[in-house]
Length: 170
Ligand code: HEM
Image 1 (cartoon, rainbow, N blue to C red):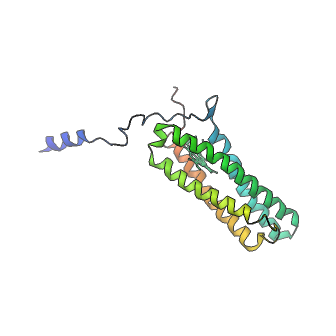
Image 2: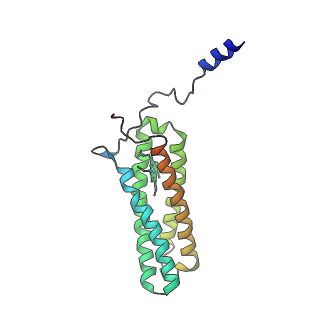
Image 3: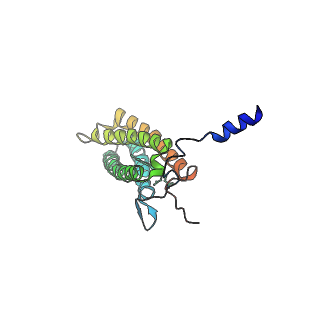
């Protein structure tokens, strides 16, 4: 009886892990081995925090400079976010071991949600950047900070827990 159970569990194979190319996870969208996605994500992350900071300073001081700074950081954050998104999507589609893992798709869904919010935060300010800040601009910025934190943290899990995108060289 025990022997049978042992034999059956030996025969269990994870069908996902058995996929051809499951262990091929090395980045293919890279410059001399340095993944472009990892290099580019710092910009949208930092700019998302800057937008919230500029909104808060506008609320505090009433100085139009901060509302204009928020407009520019929201716009550049969104555009750099799109660049990061393209490099990440190329990685997801081109690398079989990344494509096969569910967490990579979870990251994709969270990141696309973030990009939609970053775009909305920028678009909202394009026709009157000062009036846009209070209350909806700063509320959107706060939401973006929360979602970018989750996206960045989750991206880190992909690299440091699942080792996606890392080199196979020893
Ligand atoms: C929209 C589609 C996106 C896809 C498909 C995607 C996919 C990936 C993949 C596959 C990795 C593993 C490393 C690699 O292979 O390069 C990764 C890492 C990461 N992603 Fe994304 N990503 C996307 C967008 C974003 C965005 C918009 C952000 C943040 C603004 C972001 C933040 C991160 C971070 C922080 C890492 C860890 C980088 C490291 O520590 O080396 N991702 N992403």
